[in-house]
Amino acid sequence: MITQFMFFSGKGGVGKTSMACTHAVRYADEGKRTLIVTTDPASNLADVFEQSIGHQITPINGVPNLWAMEIDSDRATQEYIDRALAPVRAAFPPQIVKVMEEQMSGPCTAEVAAFDRFTDFLDMPEPHADSFDM
Image (cartoon, rainbow, N blue to C red; front, side):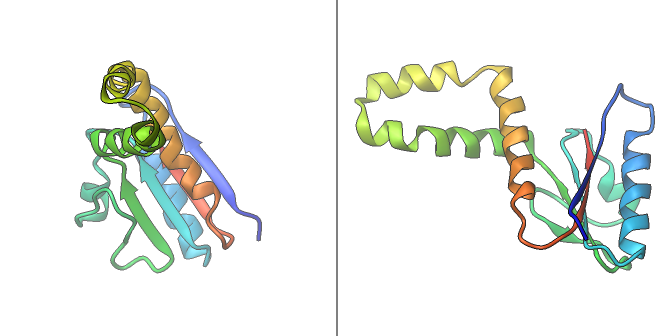
């Protein structure tokens, strides 16, 4: 099986989460290891699956082959900044690091951080199906 990725995006209220969940459950029911990931700060994946999910990959109760993750934008952004600035902190004085931290404080950094988390799933070693609710 080839790894498959499905992205569900659009305006609020058009059914992205419903479609992403339906897709994910269908693939899991077919025996495909499936992960559903959302970047929505008002995520309702926990409501849909009636369980706590959070920022880590979590198995979904009652649905074999299905896992979910709610990317916490603030946490993902801070993790991205820390990782990106680690070599800078080691090589440059604090005043330069401070300028770079200020440059990374804008809203674009949060979007880059979310995309960076998505790329983590591209490198998963075994075939799987991923459903992204954006």
